[in-house]
Image (tube, rainbow, N blue to C red; front, side, top):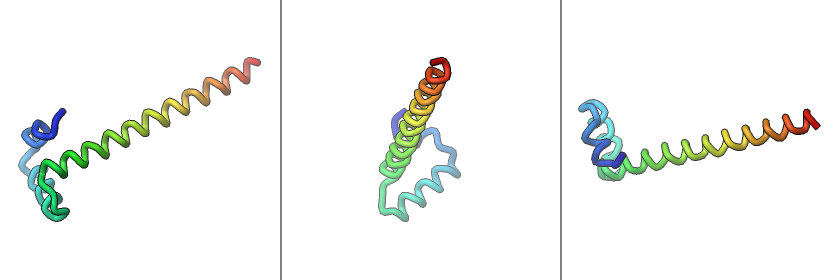
Length: 67
């Protein structure tokens, strides 16, 4: 989903809060939404990596139990 679509789909209350945040940070609304989207993607990536590492650790532990 791109930034313009996200902004278009915001409720008026959410948009007002986002505009206030952007203004306080000296950013455009588009910049603020893009920054938030980047943070959410980074957190999602980290979560996926952590989940993959946990699954790998469980697999190794299961193999050691069998051996």
